[in-house]
Image (cartoon, rainbow, N blue to C red; front, top):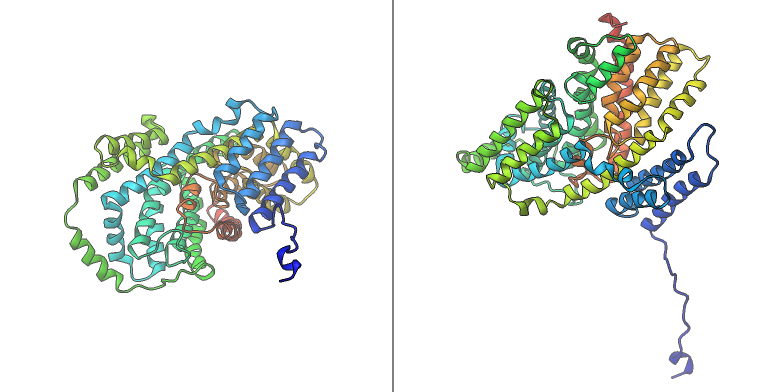
Length: 483
């Protein structure tokens, strides 16, 4: 045997071999670092610019998934504190946000639906009525969401605690489970109901917590909005969106199960096998009845949506329908609690340090001299897609609705047209991302839809909504004499 065989040549080992995740991490870091070291725009607080760099890095990470979401967002907050941009209390304020806790509790209720069997019972009941086709099921659930939207003033409560458990129960009843690598039916239902949930939120003044805020801000600008005028103006464009979105997603994001005619007979058989309602199911129904009553009467009673959800959860825990072990085992809830809280804190700090005010003023200067129609389209588009910077509809409305409304009116857009269109957009833009509104982390956290599909489809549907609401909507508003 030759000496060469005893002493093989050593090859250089790469210390950090490139793979997809590491490449994506490098892209995220490059984006954030590029903004961080670039000159601070005139009139902007340097802290706001650094926060913007961190926010872009974090959002890019949520899109590209180079590391786990909780790790990504939590380390971003730690960096905020380490660099002295904000104090610990400011950086971690998102963990006390009521919306975050409402989202987290929705995961626990979904577990209650599964554990007691109530979710399956309702799923089989829906399947027995509209289960012949996937599209029929989607429209049935969307119609349910629309009905609830007139009474429940929280999209997170409505979509997250009621519609989401129904969607997952139906999916599992048909053998479709999360993270299984296929798209039997669950991915389609989850994405469809999430997108349509943003539309139903826009259709009633009471369907989303931010809508009354829009009403108040519009009145300060001289535009009167009532429950009736809001609902009438949203009626035609809203139903057009609700009709188009399930059909369009069936074409561009088709499930494997398109028709299941036997599901009706299967569902009826399963309902007979389940027998009468169990004790756990009755308690779940009782808990939900109390919550729906409190949500519907929140304006008079004064109990917030998050406190209402905590009351419902307390009932389930005290009656042992859910145990504390059930709560601790819901990993998706705690994962969402961490990454969504962190993102809310970053977005809140951006507004606090004046980034949003600077952005609005900068846009206003660029619109000078444009035709009112052109200005209206630019303002609407910017208001819609600036939501990539927000982790809450209410935060976006608070920061930018009034400035953009004043920009539109100043550019010659009829006040009512500007106020109502921006008001509806204030609900619609919540469906853009995995973090843009309360239900987003709940539906995305189910594991049915891949991250890249979520972002891509969110953008496509946003174009559809803009086209419908600014064309059909504008014509309809003219017909009903809104402007």
